[in-house]
Length: 272
Image (cartoon, rainbow, N blue to C red):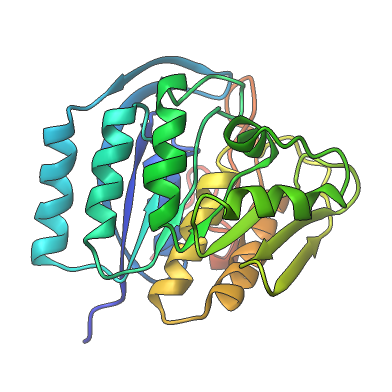
């Protein structure tokens, strides 16, 4: 049996299992690729917020990355929470030396509004990380944080995407999920545009949507799909995951990463 494509996530751990490394690996499994991980930070996190975060030393992040890539190899890389300027720059250097597409999710703020990136790291994201990205996937808060462009309407998405592209990624996917109406995203490389629309579901359990989308894009790129095809397929996957989001804890529950695999077994259900 031949091995599936391999995808490496470089991100923080979410102890609640809804976002971060945990969401990435669930997404990769659901989409038929072999997920691997480089843990950059450990968070104490649940459905109501982030209670603490501890970044790993740069040497530990480098060692994890080299251990995986030098032996197993990788068909795509996805980044998430990188926490500090030192980690951002180290990861950018590692990705720059790896012959694989990179999906950069410039995580700055958690779903609950907790900061996951030091303010001092923003310039490193702009000048080091975005230039090595095949696709950058900021949401509207992250666009404002990185570029100063504030998106109020769908028409503003073009201006936001241009501002992101000015830092060097090959493609920018500006996620308009915080706007009203349909969930609309704009994917562009500066010459061609792809508008992606999906229904907006009345479901507050959306923890991990950004991680899930970026991981899904990386998974489809690892399978050899073009960027527009990979993003469209990832959008379809995350839309289904949002539709199936469920309540855990007292706050914002996770999306359903296994929605396309069939209904989960209920409590006490045994399989033969």
